[in-house]
Amino acid sequence: MTTTQQFKRYEKKAMKVDSKVISGREPYISTLRHGDYTETFLTIHGEGSEDPLCMFDRMRERLQKLNSGIVRMEGVGLINTSGKAVSELRYCEDCRDCSLREPNHDGTRNCPVSGLYAHTISNAKLQPVWLGGQIVGTIYEDDFAHYCFLNNILPELNVLTEKQTEQVFNRFEAALKTVGMEFRDVIRTWFHLDNIFDWYDQFNDVRHRFFKERGIYDALVPASTGIGGANPAGVSIVGNLYAIKPKTDEMRIRAVPSPLQCPALEYGSSFSRAVEVDAPTYRKLFISGTASIAPEGHTIHLDDIDRQIELTLDVVLAIMESCGMEWNDVTDAIAYVRDKEDLPAFDRYCERTNLSAEPVIVIQNDVCREDLLFELELAAAKAKG
Figure 1 (cartoon, rainbow, N blue to C red):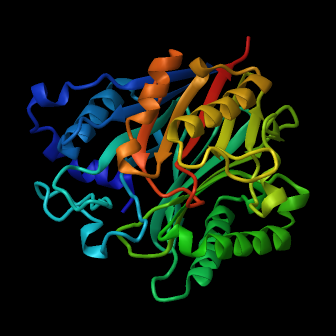
Figure 2 (tube, helix red, strand yellow):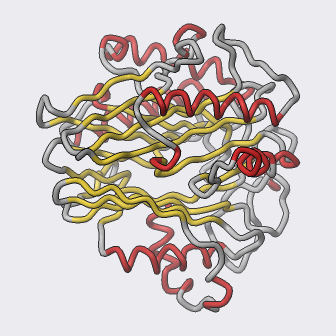
């Protein structure tokens, strides 16, 4: 079940929550106005042990005021899967009948959902994307392109991890085909891999073969995040993507190099550091999951969370600056922290550097290397004129 479906299912329950409880932290809202369209990006932060229905209620209230179509809505949770926790303890067991069933590393009663994110657009016709009798995403268009977001693409359960990865890519392709797109239109991907340390290399091998067979290396290699993450379906991998099919040559899409890091392709990971979408009336920047990696490709600042965060932000801000973007242009971001005790470290960095932490949801996840303590992904947008 997608988060959007969960939202609809629990909307009535959420309406019963005490308004004093749901007032909480103000959401982070970023707005992009271009032509006849207004895109809004909302981040709702969780409040400690808050019932997740309260977050849904706060999101519902905001969405009702916008009167816009929902392009994408997701719950962001504590989904660390280092293998230290037995599977029975990785999920909420009994939290006021909430069936979000988000993974919970500690097996505590506190809700592991750290926040909700939504992307909406006004004056655009949104249509569902169907695959195998299920809604798996949304497609919409503006004056310059068709856009497709696919969410929660799952493989079959009882096959090897490499085969599951192949199935996710094949289902990406099948869903895109239903809306007149192909994988060469994909600009951004997200992959959550259960027990990521055990098979990240095999995942990269499968992705490399798929990209080579489809000619992706001769086109645009998408920006991407590959992160640890269990899931209620019990499969080894879950995938999301964002694709854009331009209507005009005025819409330009390009891979953006990192001024401070080598291309990920040089050490066997098939993704671009970032991708920029340059339309006649706006620009968007999608920065891949970024971590404390030296220009040569190895991890640096071992066992030092503060220095890893500092380097990661230096890299991210350098990419943004190279594209004429600033931190105020961020629409949404997720910070992944490997160890629970280091969750406050990002806020410490923000306080020390006077950087706003409001666009960022901080969660606990395994990163793709065991010696990486922190990773940050983000998107930014800026209107022209």
